[in-house]
Image 1 (spheres, rainbow, N blue to C red):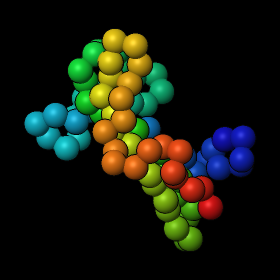
Image 2 (image 1 turned 120 degrees about the vertical axis):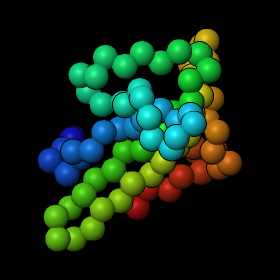
Image 3 (image 1 turned 135 degrees about the vertical axis):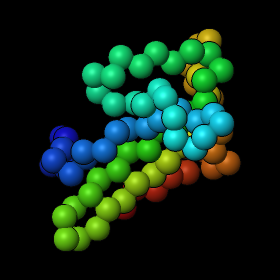
Length: 82
């Protein structure tokens, strides 16, 4: 939102991953979703500019007792934002 793309970010931020590719908990403001240690979920922010393009990046993570662990092969520090 600070970069001026708030209106272009209208999709949920992520979702649970289990027996199906998209399942609860859905990570979206106001959902009240509670993540428990061992829960696997996607964090996939995206913006969509009408008539131009959309872009999304996805990180698969597992909740732990003290935070989270990334399941992606590439470390988060290697992501280049253009």
